[in-house]
Length: 444
Image (tube, rainbow, N blue to C red; front, side, top):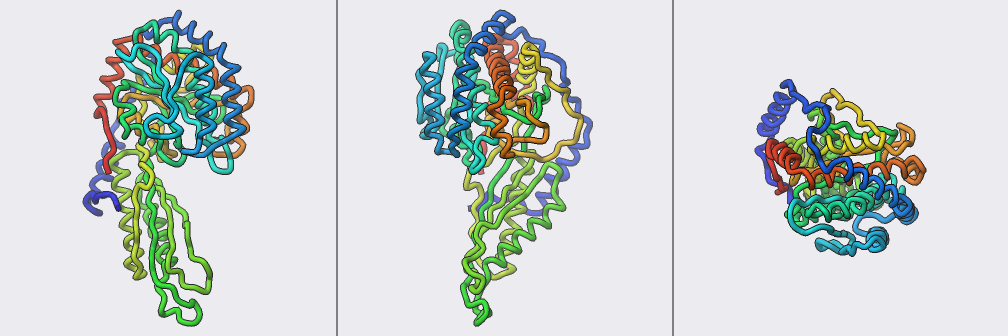
């Protein structure tokens, strides 16, 4: 069923005008200054770094095995077993099949009480081009950070979890875990993503858009396209009209909005008036309110195509859980930047550019529910070879990528132990999170 209406065209105009007012108001950025908190201390960071360096051969093997046997979302059975094997080898017994998902994983060290930090892993691949998004490296980073930090966390009297989240590319595994209560007892989280080039995320972080999927099937009436076309009701005409209507809509949406779609069924034979035709659209926006409004506008366009062609429309909004905009914690990003500096990697200054649309991730759902970060780290390849390019998969198993993976694991682990060790840092993270609204759980 379509999502609830938000008030039609007038409401859309109100939301968009409000966004424009806010975007034109001068904002005081959080700045790129270093963290002012003590964290876990230099000795703990040194111990963590040595542990991660010792783990590097195992992490390289893990990343390579995932690269060699890529599996798509919700089918990562071999991949999750590879992660579990590394954990077991290092004395941690994971749960595979956690949260009601066959390929989700959960492992935990520490007291089970006190502050609780989660390190997140992905390991699903893309159809046809394997680990061209680098999730094999995300898995290596997460496992390295978790195992490297584990001995320190045990001494702190805190709790650290590793959560393996399936189907980021195609199924919203993190939202499924959220709905299963998997993040209810966790106070903060982090995950690191590989990127093109050699840079890391700026302290301000990298926001992403939210995305919703809209599937539509039009039904008409078949007829001989040459003999008796007047008896037919052309479902393909409805899809074409819908596509054109969405294309016209694109001219009048916000800079943080995107819409794109494909025709998934256009009929069976040219000489038969198609009685059924289908399309799939992705609707993206940089804020939750504008994402809802844009969704309504696209649904209106799809309904209009049915009216114009005499067909009926079956519209399904969110066949996959929506991905929400990513809003990283600046305080945790400062800890990430400092930890990378200890490894000889600098984070660039925050860009002074207007917000634009871009890709999406279900990590955004986590950042809306608890304080979390999702920084990126360049893996040393060409600046022009980005994730989702086929060549990026091969780059993930190069020496420069393994070096970045190791540094990211150390930085990732440092964020975790800093948060767990420093009550003042936790208070600042919580205050920042509360200032932007606190916990948000998506409801259609």
